[in-house]
Amino acid sequence: MKNGLNIFIGGEAGQGLVTIGELLAKSLVRSGYSIVVTQSYQSRIRGGHNTYMIRVSPEEISATRESIDILVALDQNTLTLHQNEVSPSGFILIDQGFWCDGESCLKIPYKQLASERYSNVVALGVLGSLLGIDQDLLLKTLADFFGKKDPKAGEENRRVLVEAFRWGSQKPSNHKLPPAPKAPGRMMMNGNEAIAFGAISAGLKFYSFYPMTPATTIGQTLAGYAGKMGLVVEQAEDEIAAINMAIGAS
Image (cartoon, rainbow, N blue to C red; front, side, top):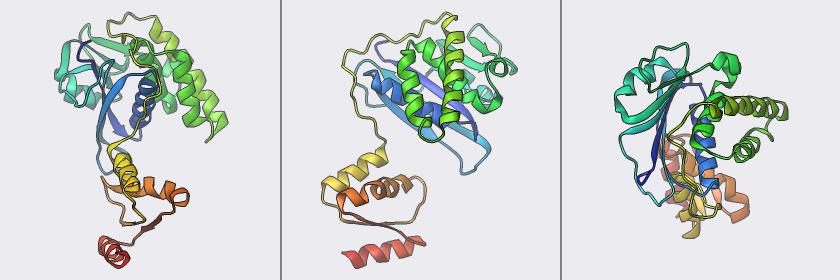
């Protein structure tokens, strides 16, 4: 555990892998752990192959590593592409309906635990229990994410997570995290949010942009603080217009 754990979540666009990745990452941060997250995704609404990787440690870390300790395969393609990257002591979480051979495969009865719509929450609950994350903390993180948007959906997500957590707690795990040495209260942000906050701290007053990956969330973050911080944030119709606006504002 000296180097922490590497958790790799893979699946198609539309399966909610980013949601469970962010909920897991936030829960780990709230528990006091240090994390580093990397993402890869394709420019499509459904299908393709997307990944969300979290390296977590009770000690300070600042980079990712290649070997996978826990592979959460939301589709068969993820298993095919990344099974060989799993460390000798690692394991794989996968739907019991998919093919997976070996003692490292933990087959989850997704359809018994919830409908397909909530399969990502099932994965979160099982994974959280295997890591030893406090269930109440997971539920609070889930409620913060879903509760305000749709209370009814939030309650169903809560029920699914509790059931999945119960199922996972009955399985043996050699990957439970040790207690974090630092008190909870760490701040979680991505690189683009850090850029946005740094720009505000440096005195930014005007920001024009055209939304293109991977820089889109810089503008979105700044727009969220525009009123409070006295910023002017303008989304232009194309890149040239954004450049001209910046030149004019300067």
